[in-house]
Structures are given as structure tokens and as C-alpha cells.
Image (cartoon, rainbow, N blue to C red):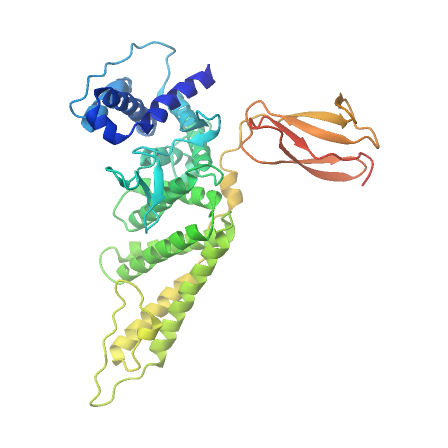
Length: 458
């Protein structure tokens, strides 16, 4: 029943979204399909929002979704509410079920995420933003099917500063949300690059606004969730590093230049410190082959800043009748080759002070989190797999009840639910400690098997 429900929900939200938008403008039937899809989509969004900010009128969710559909498709046919049937579910029950839809088995029987709200992204623009409907009539930035409320749902956990009590339904759903976000960002999933880029943009934006003192604590909590996701999701390749490293360094520079004066100077200074901590976290702990490229770009940035400082230090004061050129580091630090050999005394001293303070903040920064800390956030609730010993015969395999010395043996692990991983470590005592790795036998990830070994042989 659960698999069937997920199948139909994905059909309503995902498959129906493949109807070309241009077609909905000319065909009433296609427009009705789009309306049905929109109501299902907005209902799922509303459920997440209600779990973050419970409302006593939460049973009006179908009405809310219908209004959103009408706003998006003015003049479309009316959509009526379904009769209230089924068990009584609170907003945490509904949110948990909605998360299962976000990351579930698609029509091709593969685990995938719902990544398209306005169409699945087909390419990336120069800034790395996913764009849908390339060269079509509705080409534009495609929105990921994940809004900020989903990240806020994960931020309810106390580890992120949220209000969810330990052991409460809110904490359980927050843990599950973080797992879903991590699943959507999995480098093996199609379209996950687009999802990670949106998450990165949210992270940098929330770091800026939260530390800049212009918003409340919800930005701090969201930033912590997004940073945890970025760390654990990692960097896919050098291309992602080329997008991410300059992006966060530019934000750090802008925050630093805004920290010199004004009522929010202290908050912007904290934004710089937070950005540097995040850079250190990613350089040391992030997974993925793009981490080395990210670190290289960061090192090159600070090497350039040090060359600028050296060029300013080497500049001399003007002698009459020389005229010194004024150097202003706005909006970002300039190229060291553009530093003039002659600078006015006050300008030179001010630049040296600003550059040195910026470098000092970087040199004094350090990682403030580790992957182990984040991975221990929500211990898995799944039961351990069942262990089955397999004797490998010449023509067939046999299930055995114990290890027999000299008999080729493998270990099967049977999971009640699909295990989200490509391998599972196994350690046994068989004439000495033996470390093995079990890998999936088929595509459903419920059965894993180790390589064969000989018990009693080291």
C-alpha cells in the first residue's frame, strides 16, 4: 500500500509536471492536468510549512493548495476538495509521509528526488544556476522542489538551535528531514548537482543575512542545517569548486569591507569569521573529489591578498611634485599588479591595516565542526541487518549455521528496508580478525553480500 501511494503521488507531482508549459496555454485538457499537478504540489508544500509553524486551521490544506493553483493558473477549471476520509493524522505524520515522496522510487523504479518545481533543469547558466526549458518559450531559472520551509523543518532539531524537545515527534521529523536533504544531495542521483547548487546559494545567503544582523534566529538555524548538508554532500568535481569557492570568498570580502564602520559593523565582522570557519570546514572535512580543487582556489585567493599587501608595503610616499594615486578596495580586493609604486601616506597605512586584519582573521580561523559531529546528529532508527552464512559450492550455494574451516564462505546481509549505501563494512573473527565489505546483490538494496573468504586462513 505504501509503495502504491508513493507511486501515485509521484505521478501527480512529478510525471504530470512533464507536460510542456506551452501546451497548457493552448489545450484545456493539458491545463487541467497542470492544475491537478499544482494542487498536489502545493498541498505537499503546505504540509511542510504547517509542521514548521503549526496552525489550528491546518485541516484547510486542500483549500490553501487550491488557491495557490488558481493564482498560478488563472481562468482554469475549478478544483474541489476530496472528502475527509482515512485515519486522523497530525501535521508531523503528514510531514513524515511528504518527506517520503520527496525522495522515493520514480516511474523507472529508481530512487530519485523530486527536483523540479517549474521543470527539471536542463543546463546551467554562467553563474552555475540551474535553468530549465533551454531555448524554449519559458526558459528561465528552474526552482528546485524544496523550499526554505523544508530546511526550517530540519532546523527544529535542538542541535541546530531549534525548539524540538528530545524524543518528540518534531525531533524525529527534523532528523528525517536532514536525512532526506542528504539523500537529495547524493552525488549519485540525477539532478543532484542542481539541488546542491541551490542549497549552497541558500547557505551563503543565510550566513550573510543571519550574521549581518538583519534577521532573526531562524536564519542561523537554517544556515547550520545547510552547512551540515554541504559538508556531508561534498563537492562533486572541480567545476563545482570553481563555482563555490569564489562565491563564498566574495561574500567574505564584501562582509569584511562592510565591517569597517556603521551600526552593523560588528555583525558583518562576525559574518567574515563565520564564512572563514565554513571554508575551513569544507577544506578539511567535505567529501567528494572536488574538495582539493576548492582548497587550491582558497589558497590562491589568500596568496593573492598577501601579494597585494606586499605591494602596498613596498610602495613609497610621493615626493614633490609627484601625485599619488588613490587606491580604494571596493567592492573587492584588487589585483596586486594594479597597486601603484607611489601612494599617499594615509591611504597606504589604511590599506595595510585593512589587509592585515583580513589576513589575521583568516590565519586565526579554524574548523568549528566535524563530519562525525553531524553524522551523530540523528542516530538511525533502522534495525541491524540479518546475517546469513553462505557456503560457496561448485554448482550452488548453501546456507550454513556456522563457519567451517577451509570452506569458501560469503556473508549475506538482509535489510528490512532498502539500505542507502553502496557498501556495508563487516568484521568477523575467523582464525583472526577479518575485515570484509558487503555490496548490493541487486538494485533494491535489501540484500548485500561480501566477497568469499576461507575461515581459518589469515
